[in-house]
Length: 209
Image 1 (cartoon, one colour):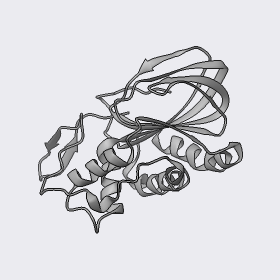
Image 2 (cartoon, helix red, strand yellow):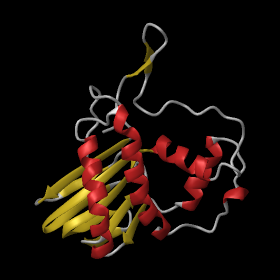
Image 3 (cartoon, one colour):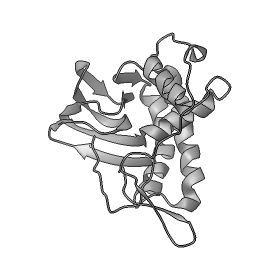
């Protein structure tokens, strides 16, 4: 249940990694949203929820900058989706495009609706099993950095997974229409300064992996 920041790789808003852990994973934080899907085994999750048992069929959803670790019960295999927070806010913005005036409103709405920094979604072993072909392909596509020509395929696979997980997440009753934004320009994602090459073509420098 972890990842690294690699400033030498190309920036991508979406990374998927598979990991099998046999020893304790110390609590760490990431500046991205994480979905940790338990593929096999079990563990004690150490987070702001306290200590919770997770097993095959569970999905742990972590907000950005949320401390989380785990103690495997023997061993555990997980597939973790790392999503840049600005990318997530963009998806919320377009989902409720008729009700938001800018991405600041989408960010406020996301903060209100998903007030819990840690959630455990109990999908069940059978339903999680249906996600595995999508997750395996996503992991393959992002193994060496997501290629531009496969971006839309990766996004379609991610949306298929989110279509199963997100409706089962707990949210507050705050309606989208009650969040009022102001005119604001979206900023560049973290760790992604942009340099312009000859001819005006942008080049990303930095990553979240």
